[in-house]
Length: 88
Image (cartoon, rainbow, N blue to C red; front, side, top):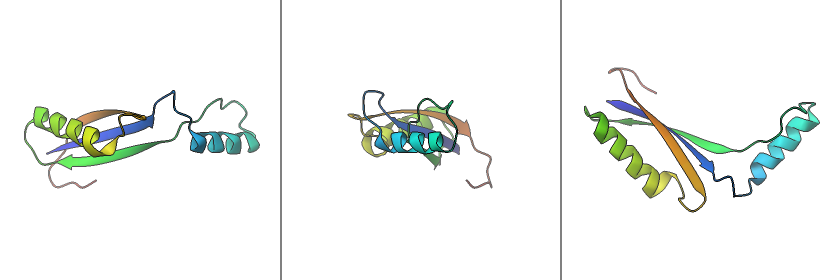
């Protein structure tokens, strides 16, 4: 079994109003050294396979088909062997 950890973020060219709101909130709390905030999604998936290449293929397919909008978002992921008997 493998665990995929996926980060989905808006492309740099896309305005991030949620990130702007959080940035302004942090500034109003006195955290003036924060210069930019971008909001994204973090997804964990368990993949039932004994083959790391299959886990990568399945993760890539999930990202392209459902988890990320290829017009507006970028994604990256890591794949790790997941110990049997544990849960996320």
